[in-house]
Image (cartoon, rainbow, N blue to C red; front, top):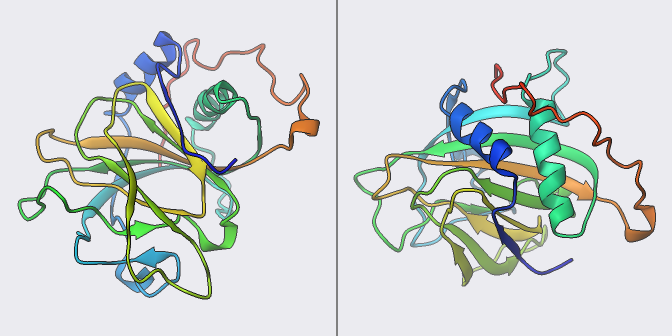
Length: 226
C-alpha cells in the first residue's frame, strides 16, 4: 500500500459518539509537536512555512513503554482502530503507538503555515499511520510528496494533499511519508487520534485475527490516565 486512503463515516455512530464525548475527559500532558532536541533528526524537516507549536498529548499505548500500568482506553481504541483499518481492506498485525493530540490556536500562526513535518518514528519507518478525526475543526493535516530517507533529508517540502478534519473520518498512509498538523484558526481546538501499526500480509488474513464477539464500546469509556 503506497496510496493515501480516506474515509468518512468510518465508525458506527455509537463508537463515534463515544469518542466525541470522552475526548474532553482525558488527562492531557503539555508537550510540543516536535521537541527541540529532535529537530536535527533525519525524520524531521523544517522549512520557511514551519510553525513549531505547543501540543497537548494523551498517550494510550506505546510499544517502547515498559511501565506496568495499562490505559483503560487501550482496548476500546484498538477495537475502533481495527474497524477503521479493516474498512480499508487491511488487517493489523501489531499496534505500535496510540495517542490523542490536541492543538489550540496560536496568535502567531497564519494561514499557509503548518507544524513541523515529520515521520512518526524513524526506527519503524515501514509502519503505517491512521489519523482519526473525532470532531469537525480546522487545522488541516498536510501530506507531503517527500518520503523518509535516513541518509538524506529533503531540502524542500512539496504538498501532496491537505485533509481538513471532519468528524468521524480518517486517513491512512505509509509511515515513511512526511506529514504535519496545523494549528486551528477558527476552531477552539483540534483533536485527533494518531495510530501507528504494522499490517498483516494478505495471505495471513483469517477470521481469528480479531475477536469481534465482545464489543468494548458497550458500557466502556475511552477515558484513561496518562
